[in-house]
Length: 580
Image: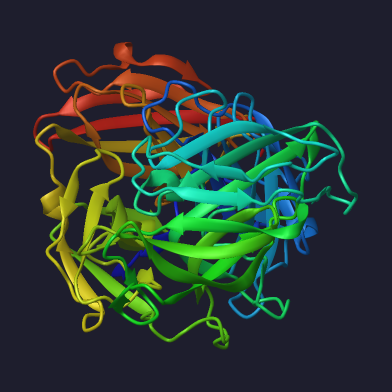
């Protein structure tokens, strides 16, 4: 009989690869015994680390992750270890056997690290299901051009006995795609204190200020990200489940006195963050005007914890709206609206102007394939990885870029979309880069939107059908599930991950996606023994053959050819391991 299996997932981003055996023992036609291991991992989580500057040559390589937080001891690698290594910018983590996260009892931990040649990072991770979670992190390359929308000011000021003898005014510039600016003013005689609240004395104040434009890709590199889990309300109470921030502008301020980190001031420092003209307030649904009060949040750079501060007041200066407030400590500071990530009680700081959910439906995509699972034939529907970003009519980002696995049978959508009279969405094919701008939609009145995936078709895109077989030296065939492949376009330097469905008693898994014709790609997965399996090839339908595959590592190429009848590149590889 036929059994229709419907796959749908809401992915925050993409990455890595893990093979998890499943099922029962069975002899395949080529006399390999199917190996089964019921000691499977829970909540397989893939992580991809990429250069925040799209198209950059340098990418994060090998480094070690540090895990901390209340549930860090429950996390292991795909090999069952507690040493968290990142290889070629991606890694794969899981939870120990028997640990099952839920929305009511999520698993929460922090990751921190530093890839060579990139700035260090710290992010919160929350797992709410035992199924797959895909995460992507964009890292800033040291000494390189900053991502669009991120401006930086580095300066110094003289001190007398550790304090300025005259006011110190710091203001960022309109550069690297930013239009807005930020400004801080420290009064003469301000006393600066260190991390241990010790008074600092010295002769030189070094200042570094960054402004993150909310309408640009600078959103992707906000310290800690815009979906933190370690969050406190105004009263200092933890917000269960964390929040999702919508930014109207963020600054990060770092200062040192003769090399010693400044943390606090004895006098408040006046701060201004310029606002986007015509920006809507998602809590009221109205355009921001002078006199409005806007929420300020701060992030402790040492712990990664966010806290709700007092409100900023909107004022009009030279026909420009700015949010004015004061701060007595240094950190990441932002005009941010918060909405709950999980189904938790509403806090006073969160107003009910965020729709809970907007359903994105996708139609008219041709990929349907048949496979074998257990004792029944199934139909497997595959789709495309798409990135969706929401904007108000005036161009302000109202929804950060989110990745979805899109197919006609997808179950899922987008959460926490502010209510505005007119919004539009940019939908991008994550592999080919083809984009489509939707018509304007009222998110006040619409909670569902249907999109035709064929609008993302590209004449230069070709279909790839890749079949994986994993065997071990003990003549066992190893089916895989919860597996990912990392796809890198070596021409554009763009990197994503895609899911590999396990679908046959004779094969480990299958991968179907569209690639750009005449582009050079690298395809990587991680084997059961933790080794990288990879190869490179120019996907040119006029010259496809096994002989054109470059740098094969860890497997045998059984097939690599273009089928003019199906108009697909058909590939098959076999990976042999002794660890099974």
